[in-house]
Length: 479
Ligand code: AMP
Image (tube, rainbow, N blue to C red; front, side, top):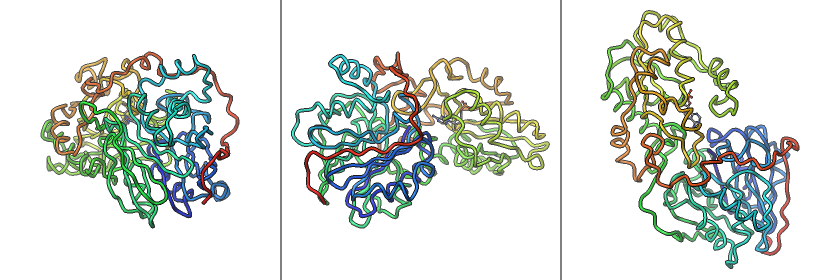
C-alpha cells in the first residue's frame, strides 16, 4: 500500500508535500519521496525509511518550485529498495514527468515483458514503472493525453498524482479501488490519498475524485475528464475502511472511525457473549471495540497497552521480524484482567500470529476467559489491488475453519463479522465495494501477474539511503 500527495501552485510546495506525507505515513513506511517542479525542470529526493528520516530542512531546500508530488511506500509489487521508491521520474520527448502511484496493476508484468521484448530498459521492479514507459511511448499530443493513453492500457488499481512540465494530473481507476481526495489551500490545488493529509496542512476538502476521473490542473485552472471505458461496477476497497485508512479520514463520504464503530456494533449483534470487559487490540481494533462495548453494554477497558515506538509489524518483510514485533508491541495489565472474562476485539486475522500472542498474553495476565471478536469476515484470499496480503496458502482462514482457528489462537470462543454483516454496514457507503479478500469475488481477474508477483529481474545493490535526481526540461514555460 502507498500514500500519495500532490500540490499545484504554492510557494512552499515541497514543504507542504512533506507535511502531507507525514499525515499519510501509516500508508507506507518503507520509503518516501518528493518531486518538485518549477514548471520547467523537476527535482526529486527519495530515500528509504520514514518521512521524517528521509527529509530534512536541507533536502527540502533543494526542492524549489510551486508544484510537487510525494509518495510513501510499502511494497506490494516489487522489492523494498531505493530503486522502487517513488515518485518515478523520467525525461520524455514531451518534457519531464513524475509519477506517484497507489494501487496494484494486474497486467504490469505482461506489459513489461512486451516492452522489454521491444528493447525497453526498466530501472525498478515495481509495477508502477510501466505507466512511465507507456506514457513516454505514447504519440498523443499533450502530457495528460499521453497519460490517459497509458492508463487505458493498464488493468487494476491506480490512484495517481502526476507532475508534468507545468501541470498536476490526478487520476483514479474506473473501479475506484483506492481513495483520492481533492482540496484547496491558499488558492493552490491539493490531492491526497486521505482527507487527514488535507486536515494537517489546513486545506479545505473539496470532494473525492470519482472512479475513472482524471483531473488536470494547469495555470490555476482545473479540468475534469472521464476518459476511460465504463466498468460494470465500482469497487472501493472495503479494507481501507476496516483497517488501512486513518480513523480521522473520510473515505467515500464516510468517516472511517464511525464506520469501524458500526462494524463493532454489528459484530456485537451477530456474536454476543457474556463477559466482564471489552478490550481492543490497539490501535486497529479500537473503534470496533467501542462499538461492541456500546452495543453489548459491556464496559470497555484498555487492558492491553501498546508500545507506540514499534513499527507496524506486518509490514516488515521477514517472518522473524514480524514475530518479534508482536512480542514487543503489546503488554497486558494484570490488575485489570485478573479473574475476568474478556472480549478481545481485533479488525482482522491474516496469518493468526498477532492473536495467538495476544490471547496467550491476556491469559497469562490472569483472564478467566478470552473471547475473540473480529470486525471483518475471514480473510480467505489475497488482494491483487494494493493491500499487502500474503499468498492464499498463508492465510489462516483459507486453510482452516473458524473452529480450527479458534483452537489455533487458543480462544474460548471466536466470532467473525459475517460477509452479510459487512455488506449490510457498507450499503450506506456512497460507493460499490471490493470485498474480494473476504468473498473471493475479484472485480478484475488477477491475470498473469498472479503467477509471478515478485518480479525480480535483477537485484539492485543499494546505492545508499537516498538519491537526488534532476530531470532537465525539454520545453515549457518558466514560472
Ligand atoms: P496476523 O497476525 O498475521 O493475523 O495479522 C493480523 C494483524 O495485522 C492485525 O492486527 C491487523 O490489524 C493487521 N493487518 C491486517 N492486514 C494488514 C496489512 N495488509 N498490512 C498491515 N497490517 C495488517
